[in-house]
Image: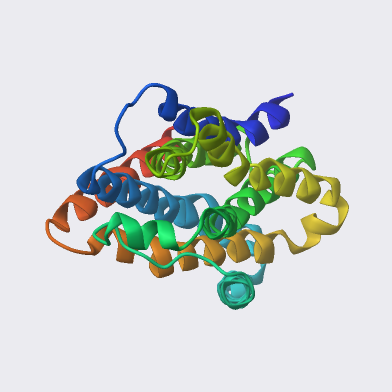
Length: 257
């Protein structure tokens, strides 16, 4: 049950964020979107380091200084995996200062594909960590796995709002906009469950898979989130909230881990 709730926690973050469409009358302002994007980026960077890359090297500690090899190899595999998906799946490249007509021109389907692409590495990360925990890995505790799930849930909240609120502003009904935001996060629990079901194959390659998820998450941060949070005037807002998100995730991992 611990793993069950941990897997669903990030998805609940997306659902709650998408639910903002029922309570907020206006679309999110440019500065609010920039702040939320920066916060999400900070959480993902900190999670990649403390919850994925460092545990990956700890898993391979018996290799001595060579422990960095699985981490580096998995990291680059994650980068290349997202790079390939980035080319195969049509997705969104925009910044918050583009006119509303330009934003809507990308299409609702494209927007959902973009967020789904972003959520793939997050679901993988949660699944890999809980697979390690359920198989009795000494380096991965229930609290440490919960810290990762909670951190991703926190950053999924603004992500759900960033999806549903603009769709509502374009004229979509509240229920449909909410459902679109929810669907953008469904890939996370599904990916996590599939990873756990393949646990017997996952555990031997755990150092590679942990760092793979880290590489994929950092690709999303650098390719998508940082450009969005830094575009236009007052880009320091995104930077400040990036630091805030990084600090929150760092504290969660150290305190709970």
